[in-house]
Length: 380
Image (tube, rainbow, N blue to C red; front, side, top):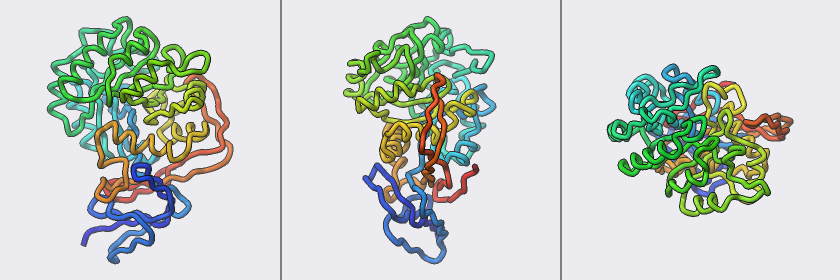
């Protein structure tokens, strides 16, 4: 007899289906099997009382670094799963074609949580990233590996969802647009989207956006000045609005130095919500300021972004960016993933990447998680 799991009585928020109400969710054979009021089962079911909690599709963190022990910035994927109720972790360029086979063998295939990846166009991925050593992998053009990147991506299409390139003074030195131009060619050859990191110029943000197309992702989209999406007088740059109009996806990618409360306030005041909320959690920010996906989501709640939209930005929208309609939804037949969260009220202090502190009244924490139809309690 097949195992059946029922989450009973929670507030189900599933933006992919326009759902926000109190109901049950059932899972069978690793898939979502039912959603509605007073779902019953066969007697072989496991019923988990989630009353007073929020049930969402399995959270997707579109920007992480989980090549643990294989790169200096990698963190343990299972920590993010057990403590953060994240069911899909997308590693963004930790590995390049030179070391992706090791990432696949030693991490992706070893952990039960789902790990997908954007493959770095630089041969060695992000190899020089620590408190003492900071060498941008796109700064040495000898490491650009378009042929190898195409070969490895084609051989691993079950796990590689796109191509990653990092440009900016810290990531690419004075290589300008050249790494991005190479990555553009690679993505076009593969028919895959790009995710582009931007930090301080060069290159300039408008030059970067000009090379992005529908489905490409600009991460660190609410970064502080310079290369900021907002103008000094509180407007949104025209070229940013034009990029969104043609389908460029704007992703938070909080990280160590890439998220500003001030920029977020400006953009939200102009009704420019991020498409995706992600943590960019890595070894240098997992103890702050980013911490994890739920902390990043909580920051947006405290900036008055509606809860349903915050959930959308960590479920349905990243699933769309990944072209994975089986994820980010509780539709019947979808992947049997769900996140069980608690929305706490009180006094909570948050910090952004430039040191501004925000006293907020809301916090999301993980209570439990369902992965492939199996329930797990989360660890505080």
